[in-house]
Amino acid sequence: MTEDERGQLEVERVTELALLRHRRHHAALTGGSLEFCEACGNEIPEPRRVALAGVKLCIECKRAEELATKRMVNDEF
Image (cartoon, rainbow, N blue to C red):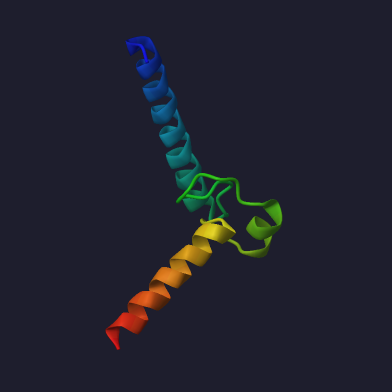
């Protein structure tokens, strides 16, 4: 990979991060749901965004979060 290609990849990565931060900030200001998952960046389907006001995670990431929380609670006992 050339230095130019590495530079282009870095520009794309920084741009994606900036867009994700902007979307998250906008959703926080409006109280609305995010269009893209804050964990993985995948699009959150519109029916989910409408049904769950303020949703920030896609179904897969929410499921993983709940499983991790459940494991932590079970490990405490």
